[in-house]
Length: 453
Image 1: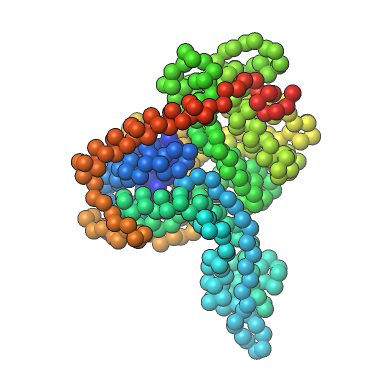
Image 2 (image 1 turned 60 degrees about the vertical axis):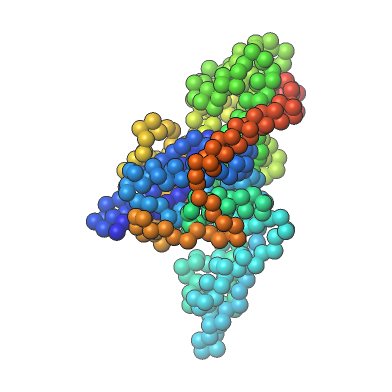
């Protein structure tokens, strides 16, 4: 009987499920399936039947390819903005040896679960957490060394990732509808960061540039210490461009259009005021500067004030779908050189994604897709392997109990598929109308857009 890790990433462009298989002979392989994203708006689940249908399709594709019926998955959370909180927990040691207090396994287990006692606001829930540092009587101590250590108490500094309860409930309902048991929930950004960030660098930043949002993190000695979710992205840029040029069609600025661009041909003089060059590349470049670069730059420079550590550390890494644009690192560096003084100017580069061994696609058309789009599921598989998480057992035709939320699971039928199609069409039409009515018709001049003349 084969064993496996299954991970699921519900993105704004693609839904991806990857299966890391281990058979009795010791052979391993990773098979992944990808479908176009449906039912997601602004990184939240907007149409549950569409999402459920897409997830089921992924399961079917993987079963056809591998013979394994996926029953439980580790999932990258999707549900809008993530809020990060620091939390300190302390546990009194209960062990006793010759009148000396020491930490026993029960104390360590209690400490590892202590983050659950964090009191959140009513509309927030903890979706993921990281243990940043363990201590014994206030002094740093590795987790592996805590058992049996002489101390009055042991403590931990946690980083907690919080999300809105209503979106978290939608997330769980979607998994229930797909009849999948959730083996764990992770913030995708931190899992890909564990794979991409160089632990030998004392300071490094990572920016995940997605179609509809940006995630930025700052790492010290390979440990994530600061994190921010920023709404917006190519979806916003696309709407602004459509409003500025009435002759453009939505299909003219599909996300795949970005892959045809070459930002190394962008001219720095196009940034100058009163320049009348109206090339499409200048328009797109101006919006990229105002939306992506200004957001990331302001977070690192003004909020976190980490320019100097980045300059003498590992600089900024880019990942995500937008990082696949040819020359995006050149463009970032060009824009930053105009805004930052030389003494604070750090380097930007696209993260190097090493292809996992025996990485196979269920469908040939996705075999050559840039690994930037799969950084989250690859990172999740990496994390599960490193932490030696218990593997799932493959068993054809035997289903496990799904998550319980008090709502019945509705079997998919021809009627539900028809309803899904109708709801999807109406949802997309309505979203286009709302975006058109609320659109911000503004200049694409980069200096004007980011508020600096």
